[in-house]
Image (cartoon, rainbow, N blue to C red; front, side, top):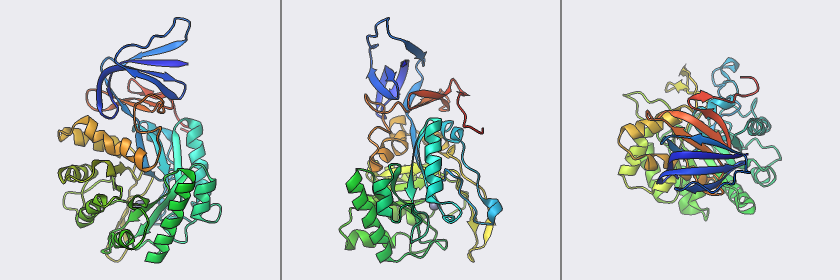
Length: 386
Ligand SMILES: [Zn+2]
């Protein structure tokens, strides 16, 4: 079935203006200012957006799709994230991963959830491994997992500068980065290490040293949660200047906390004139949000959702950032890092993953792979057990 989306104010993410988009199956077949010529013999469903903004679907590059948590007893394991937890937040592509718990959660479970989300209609991928080294893999090594398993794009989230890490040494980290890089070359996949940053004072030292002492390209080292400390973020911005993609997490930040919200971090990054293409934002959805005291004792617990992404976008727009700029860390930037060429853009031959924003910057519609999951403010598709 062809779907014609008429009268949309289109962001590619660059502002294109008023136009029409034709969707054929799972892909975009046409983007233009005049209506495409469609013979009356064709079956076409038409959707008139009446000037609402149409933007690329969001890529959530860091989500605990099986549910994360479990850091304060087994009862604190977060349940599996249902598909509408992503689609209602505008997320049409998600990258699943494991964190602290890579024992009762494993790569096999992550892959199963990737396939489940695909069956339910969105694009999903995952990393192999988790916080700890040696990493939990399915086929025996990070390189082999990336090479043999289609949905595995790299390794992560590998924890450094964190009391929950395996205290990886420099040699361990660069060996793993080398495996991911070579597997990426062999497959055309991202081939990156997605690296969890903790609160520790060593911050980014291991990555900075790897850039200086090894031949590995900077893009292989992809630190996340870099807005969790102000000094850490300042150093991460410099790392972006050296060629790394850095990822900020849309977690809640208290006024007096030594951290930047994702929106504040992005604003500072853009003001600082760092490379615009090398920053992304992710939700940590399904992950727990623990707060520890200086002895590593858990003080309180919450869990994250992908809804933090559209909230961050709204905050950026309220700060006067243009929509075309605000969209980049949610769309084209992660697509570039992850080598997902069909994603993060509204373009002929790209996947038909799109989000409709209403006048209040709320998400009124979401199309994933050519199917509406949300339209006119209503959720149309739910997961098997929702
Ligand atoms: Zn993490």
